[in-house]
Image: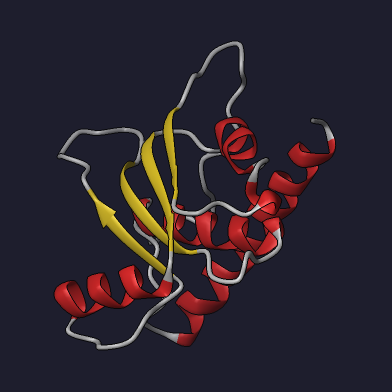
Amino acid sequence: MESDTVQDVPNSSTQSPIVSIVLQNPAPELQLLETVVQRTVTGAVEFVVCDPGVMRFLNYNWRRINKPTDVLTFDLSVSGDTLPQGVIYIDGRMAPPLEEVLERVYHGLLHLQGYTHNTEEETAQMNRLTVELVKKGMKAVQSI
């Protein structure tokens, strides 16, 4: 992706993202996830936090890689969409701290916005943007 910016935290008075969170066997540490994502994600995005078995199944069926992965993003946007639309599967194994789950959330969201990590430069850019978004997400947690 050419741009080095991502869509900023929505202004609650002007934007209302359509965000759905699906948790399989949610850990208490993830109870804030939906609130934080609602405050920091713009678009029509469903996040599914699931176990490594589901991640392995999806990774094999879609990428032919027979092992679990931490994030899988399925872009459902159509031509002309201005906001990201899709489903992001996140491995929630062993109830990671909220900050780590947010890292996976924003990593997937960056993929929906067209970012990739196929080169060292792209990886560095994605990592930097992910860190910025996680900081915003954690700031949102503190305001809850």
